[in-house]
Every structure is written in structure tokens, then in C-alpha cells.
Length: 410
Image 1: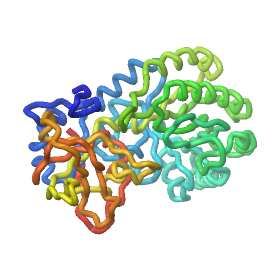
Image 2: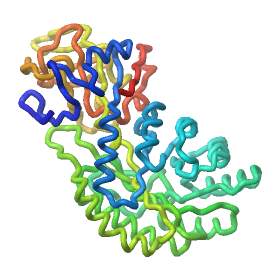
Image 3: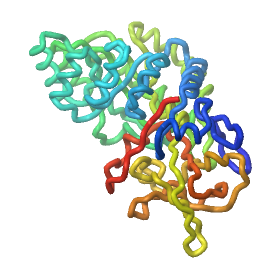
Image 4: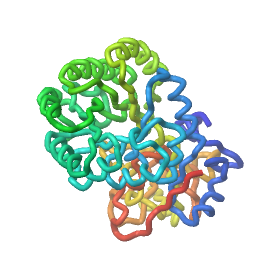
């Protein structure tokens, strides 16, 4: 469904009989299947379509990895095994989830600052690639390998000397807790030569949630340039070059989708030289939000329609404790509304301006602030779109002791 006067945003989900369909199932029926509201629902067909879109746009020898932190729901992660070439995890908990799938261990990498000795031990024993974020991690992993009688697989996560311009969240450039500063990497690699570690390559991630093709293209050029400089100091050939990702999705009015075709065409132009310079390497694009963000919705039921001094409040049974991102409290400087609608009145005329609020005793518990919505009453279902990434697991679910949300894959 394309943008209309009622809904000034593109709707990836189908609509029938005034109801949103998720995986072909009408929303009210899906709520019965979930057994409760609130709930998250993720559409397999949309996940499949996004993977196909990426495969068509990017060079054939680019390997796609899924960043599990975006959505670690086990059933969704298992579904992604058939769509991607590898996983990236950021904790031992996520590592357990992916090791329960059929993804080969050597296609799994572990990034994140402050890995504990226990996590490093688990990673080494599992045979995955550890993205080293410090000299401490390197020395600890070498010692663990000796104790376990194996050679840990490692790559160096690099804090680059450039940023991904216009990114929603800058992960590189300047002082950062992530990775090893680019200028310190040669010293780290010199020390690595004396250790019993299997060097795989580099993980160079400069930012996320970017909608500007030009910025991503520039960052990819600089990533290859940096990798070439660092490879001169490496203890062996580069077998893995993770170019990061940074692909964003539109959340707010006026935002346009990323021009993926332009990014793919530009990357294709960079690949011949990259293949020549790194003949043994797998080239990886690692994506989280871009894979799953638009494939998910959050659904809450209206408990009460309340009017306070002329303003309509739709009080629902969900809120920021399930969906911190939609409340604006997960990084927004100026709060903006995620796209939202009344899921069982999708094609109804706009009933006016209303604010969707949760049951928590804080004025921050807002899912939609003074938004044009269909006229909703008690029992109607409010849908927050673009909710497939950084939803439930990125939220303070224990706050005020309200019931949790469930997740379903359709």
C-alpha cells in the first residue's frame, strides 16, 4: 500500500477488509493467535523480499551477514539462516542463539567491547571468529587457546579514522569504546605475530542508520583504503573483510528510502581492485536494522479513549517498556513519531488528532504524539510500524512491573 492522505508513508503490509494483514493473516485474528496484546509480529515474506532485494542490488561476491542484536528472536534468527551467509553476535547470549541454528561456526563473528574471559572462552571453544576490540582481548584469547589446545580465530575490529557522515549513530571516528584505533592497529598486529592466533582480517564499522547513498559510498571507499594500509602489517593474508553496513530505513515524515541500487553499483565498481588486493578474502556487508526493521510491527489494544482539555488520548496496554525506540527515548534528540495506524481501521477516514499513550506512570510513555489517526475506540488495535529492529530486547521490560509482550513470526 502506497502513501495516501490517510497514511503519509508507504505500507509494506497488505490490507484487506479494512484490516492490516501480516503474513496474510488479518490483524484481529493474529491477536487471537498471539493470545494477548501487546505483541510483536514479524513477516517472513518481507524478510525474504529484503534479502532478495539486497542480493539483486549488491555484487554477487558480497557476503551478507545479519547483526543479531537488531532482533535476536530465536525463530527469526533461524529463518535468517536461509537468507544470509553469516551472523554477527554481541554477547554470549546471542552466541547461544546462533549456535542453536545450522549456521556454520566459521560464519559467525563476535563483536563488542568488554568481552569477558568467560565469553572469550566460549567463543574460542565454539570456533567462531572473534573481532578483537583491544590488546587485552587478544592476549586473553591467546592464553585461552593455549589452555584449550586450539588456535582461536580472530579479526581486528578497527575504529577508523573517518566517520560515516549523516549516520544516525556514529560507531567509528574520533575517540570510541569500539574497536582498536586505526593508528594503533599496526602495533597490535606486530604483537599478534608472536601469538598462536589465526588471523582472519578486519571489521571496519563506521556508523549505522544512514539514508544517504553518497555517505555510504564514501565510507566504503575509505574502508577499502584503510584495509589496504593495515594489511601491510598483518601476520597473514586477509581472509575476511567486514565492510560494516550502515544502511538505514525511513522512520519519519520526509525521509526517503536508501537508494540501494546506487550503493550496489558503486560497490561493484570498487570490487575488481579489492579482489586483486585481497585475493583470499570474503567481503562482508553486515546489516541488522535494514534486514528486519520494516518487516515487524508492534500491536497494542486501546483500553480507553480519553479527552483531556480538548486533546484525545488513546490509552493502550503497551508502551515504552516494550518499545522504547518508538517512545523516542532510544537516541532521539527531538522526539518524532514512528509511523502508526489503527490496524483494524486501515482505510478508514482520519478521525482527527490523537496521542497514543501507555499505562506507565511517566509522561515519557508516548507511542504517538498528536498524530492523525482513524477514529479509535476501546478494543481497537494500534499498530506501530518499522518495529522489527531494536524493539522488545532494547526496552526496559521490567519497568513498573507490567506484563511483557510476546513475539510471533508469521
